Length: 340
Image 1 (tube, rainbow, N blue to C red):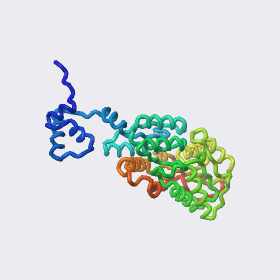
Image 2: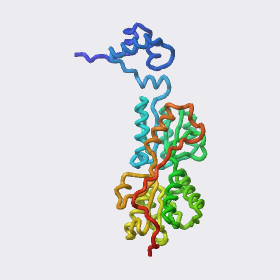
Image 3: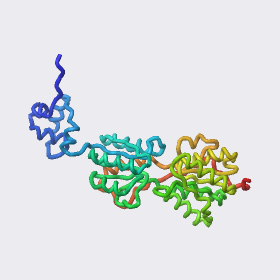
């Protein structure tokens, strides 16, 4: 038995009694077609089980369609939530997403950007780590670029959807200071992006509260577990008078918890620990960890909406800021006698 030949646009046109150009306008969404004619074409397509060729449409428009999504690490809890938000929004709008991870490497990110530009995707959403020049080239070729989770300082015109990191760190610093802590260690990442915003908010909040900032208590680490552990160990071993630690990310928070455990420090009796990013394991710690929750899924969803649904609002009025939430748990307590 011969295999049935797939229906073509000519078959649909003949069945509907219209020209090929009319069928093309119906499926591309361009041009003017009357409602009765459109329904007749769609009915003929359903009867023939016709599927428009995405490849052919892409060649004609010189675009592959869909959107590119670049994150540092798809296994990172915040990035995973951001990806889930983008996919959920794209699904509702009938778009497909090409996801890739740059590992925080600017060179790798530049390669991904170049490949997506070559594929002529309709737009790119990214949590950027790389060079502004690469992104300027992408913005010129792609119909749109939206940053999610962080921005690049030299590209204020690129629309962005961000968590209110400054507000989250302010609330956490005020909470620790309200418990009586004055020697608060700050574990931050190497300068750039959200890390700079968080450290600035930490310093500014302490200054506003009249608490002096001791430079020896502000420590930066590369975004890797070994570097985070070394930074936390150095801080807690060097400064026995530290009564609280604010970690600017969940990897740094994890390192602070591990170091405190290895030094036999009781949490929160000897040292209070809190961090930015309310990841799943924070609630499973003993005691559960106080954290600032960032809306990763909402950031991804809103970035995709901005890219696909609201092009007129892109870049107007600065980044879209989504609120964070302070989740108070048992890892922070009132100031007690200094540990030895």
